[in-house]
Image 1 (cartoon, rainbow over the protein chains, first blue to last red):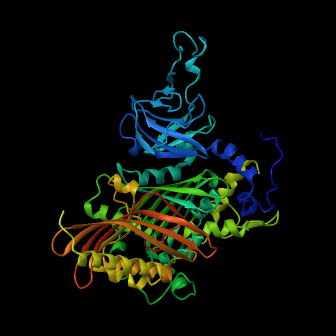
Image 2 (cartoon, each protein chain N blue to C red):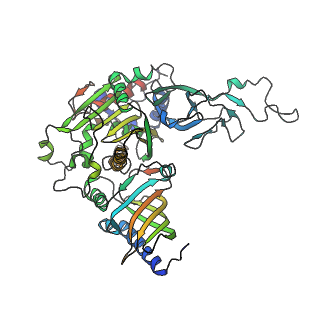
Image 3 (cartoon, each protein chain N blue to C red):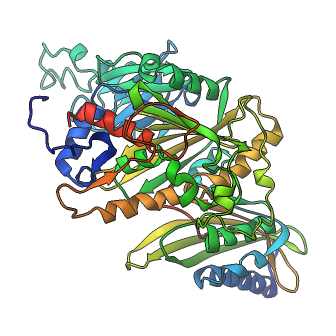
Length: 413
Length: 158
């Protein structure tokens, strides 16, 4: 594969540029499925808390490949390709459930929770006639099984036998942040599913971009939830493949940059009629109030005030993606804290005061870059041209450069 | 089931008509006025509702929060111009007492963009608690969308 001619010549400016063509070229998309989604990277599958009992399963996707994640009788979590080994029919259609085995509705080929083929309908035929050849070896026709790792309650899978373990893949700073979020047992409080009118990578850029957050999302700056002038910064993992954008609302060091300026996102003379949902409860000792972590390629962890979520982006072809939000609290939440998480859901998701714009802005880029010249590219030089951690720096695109570096590493571009 | 008088039915239908006119005619400032001061407006999906998962897409626990959503729509949030067309059907009326009524009703919302693109943006069931008076008002409207998906974003209430 790797000795193929690259599909495009990456701009000489390196990872400060991303050619618009990567959002529009079907051949590039096909290679992403091969080199990124089947390549040496870990992909978020589900939370361990969603599979409490043997037989519990959820369905998801790695790239376009349908996956079943399930807990077997021994308590282990397995990830299986959701595709019958006979004719390729999808086995589990429902998003979640509980099964003792996976039986294909088409011809009743049946698999156990580890993916082994256990029975074939009419294997011996009828009245001695028909059936499978005597030498057909069922042990060679199980479901494709992929590597799985449960890190702090986040379940990841990969097709790669080369990629290192999840903790090494994340690196110490990113692993520490996952531990910070998953510091005690969680409880799922609900889901959102949002269809984005853009290539999957545009959301990956968006969630790595602190520069846009307080400009596009006017609610943040207007109501002082998050401003670039607040203390915060960018931490990186695996040379920039992953990152953490963080800020602390109590520590606004240069607020005059917003209040004296001319940003559309700061609308003066306004207040909310009922702002009780912004009475945040400080639940982390570090003072951080907004923390968005990106785990390459398509997983984010999110803390915005008292909202906690995993966001998982799944490509739906070249020009669409689906963003799956899994929102949670802790098992030991007080009723007040749980109430606050639900009220603050007004901030997040497809209808979120501080997140709805991300649903549309990717579509503006997707449409804006259609038909662009061969060498036209996005420019990402905020915060310099290098990829290194930037504590205390918020007006920066360093995490986007990290994403594109990882992308080029895997795509050979 | 208690018999519902024509007058009660008329009040409820009038309230629903004012509701969809406020939204579909882009007169959203009229929308909070259809709710009592203490009220609950929540949009959720069948997926969350049927599993008793409390997470709302949108939740206003007071008339003030409804007014704030209108403010967000008018002045803060960023989205492509869009209009809704509501279609209502299958009204079920279940009186609680002389002045309080529970209702359920199917809704569908067609969303039209400036490009001319139209889609069935949302369809599902309204679960209402209504108080009668000179004019009926919503004490509670829970919107349960059948689909778990939202296309692009949700800024205008359903």
